[in-house]
Amino acid sequence: MTEPTRDRLLEAFLTITSERGLDLATMREVAAAAGVSVGTVQYYFRTKDEMLLLAFEHTIGRITTRAAGITRNGPVGSVVRKVLLEFLPLDELRRRESRVYLAFAARAAVTPALASYQHSLLAGLREQCAAAYRLAQERGESVGEFAPASAAIETAALVDGLILQMLSDPDGLPPATASEVLDTHLRRYVAIN
Image (cartoon, rainbow, N blue to C red; front, side, top):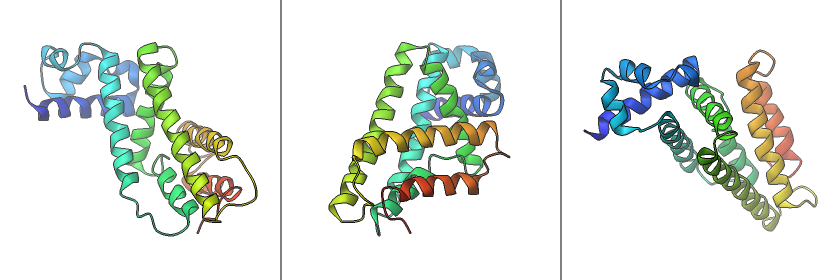
């Protein structure tokens, strides 16, 4: 078995999950979409939860790679804004990633093995936001007095809420409005361009 086969299976799983939902992303459907046998899927992934976790890690890896590639020039707040926009479903690629994220988050809420990964991811996002807010304070780029950890909790919760609402009510919260909401939130704490 090869790495390209595993990647093809993950892509098939991601496509099915993002287009038709997690319930339809069965081993049989993934096998059919990838053009392999069910046994091949089972060779790589013992359970659907294992496949979901690896697909989620793959998705988060792509998002963090894009975020890491963002130039760290200018005000801290502007960099934070650019990074957070990578998480929002502003285009088809990010909508697909966000659908997978929501499917994972819903499953993690009731599956302890997945919950620990979700908790770690969210804790990391909050810590990175808090670190950025502290840096903005150190550089004199913050707005007023605030506790970075509390602001980071609000920011992470806002991003999660924006993802959910943008996917479930795209006409009610289009990308431009979501970006404005994020900008308004960030301006409470930091300068952005």
